[in-house]
Image (cartoon, rainbow, N blue to C red; front, side, top):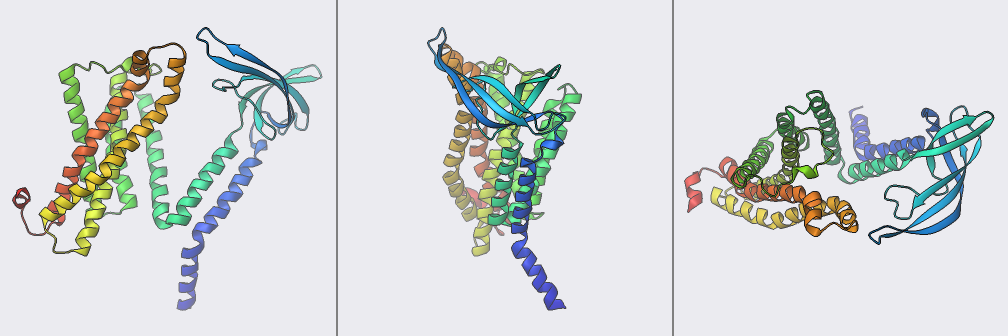
Length: 378
């Protein structure tokens, strides 16, 4: 009986990720056929016919094409299920604010009843199947390739997502009056829970948490000091044009969360590497640990800073191009679309640089043997 139980447990450990993948695939299939769950009428497009295509241009000589298409489809849910409709749709080729539709897609409708006739206009594209498939693919790869570690990483993302939603709700109820306190505290909770779930409660987790919180806090303190000295010249909070609360505290809250991710990534890499080095060489001194950590940090610092820069470019490029296409100068475009992102990237970069000696110092003190901190300065 004991042998049979062990074999069953072994089989479960081996095959449970694939079971999750199969269940996820069934869930995606169900989402693709969930039209009856929606109260809004849904049209499945069966054929598309292009009626016209006209060249368009504006006062800045930007060129585009306006396309008119006729969509034939059938309503798949509600009281009008099974009825066929013809709908005209007009969109621009750039599809910045309008969409062109294709055969096989599903769209939400606003239905108009006029006596015995039905007409409708498209309100939006039904995207739940694509979203469910993307989530399933991500989770499947994470579980199949990383197994338990992937499960812990996924758990931390879900927990942090719930906490972030609660923090946003709290901020909404307080009208943004304590946004910095809410998200500053949330950053500490994020770091602690993420490391606790992924690493577990041990010495490595505590060292990484101290380095993460310390690096992020130092970066924000340096940024506030620079803001005070320069009187925040060149920081254009007015570019946060859709914010309905004080922009400065919200910007600082964004910066804290953004810096936290980069600093946590770096701290985890450095301390995990130094812990492995300590395991392989138990007699390594504190000075050697500090030097090794500094070397590791120097190697990962460059790629990490570049990753932040690429994320920033990818986020601001569409809006920057839109500003430039509408005859705005490079200076105005930078101020309105890129300046705050550059500031956030610089603050995160400061955190990345300062975290290296901080993480090395904490690790060398806690696992560096019997040699005192004073020996590190020699």
